[in-house]
Length: 228
Image 1 (cartoon, rainbow, N blue to C red):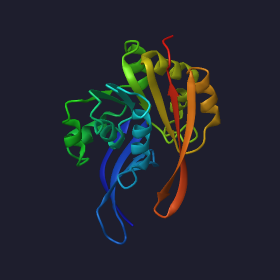
Image 2: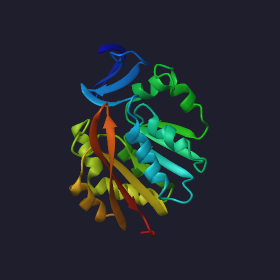
Image 3: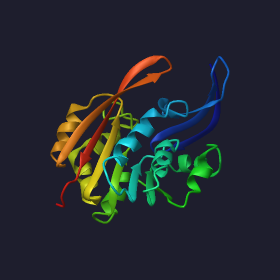
């Protein structure tokens, strides 16, 4: 399978590479994002992003204000904005080059996606962004920065699955709001930690077909039933 590098950038976290591949049998080119050589996502398989958004949006009757942690190739944002109930979707992305590639058309669908007036992309560390946010300012928080706690893109992201950070997500959620976290594998430790912060926690598994290979992905959803 042929790969062509589209863009490359360096940050304090390492190397970010956007490349294009063409299936051997022909067909449309596929964009692939890698961080320090680790596969993050591509434009061929967006099941996890769509499932994360769909599961979260079903939890709240009026998801007017949504926060997505992690821009990636924009498919989680795209799925959230497809819901007409959403009035504003803020995305916190730590990598400036990734946002630039969306804005300048290096990622072809990026400009159209970010042109939606409901989309608001902020370049920041999500932990800092949540610490500075007002209490009860979001109806939904979606965590989509890794392949789950067992498959970290960066080692420092382990803190995003620990109680202090999860407490921040609870603080910024309105009563009745919800948090949704995607994971490539079952994460019982994450489930236990969430139960120490939220009123109601539910793990959801679903099967996906990855180019003929069946895999099971997980979503962890947590609801904030009452103010704290």
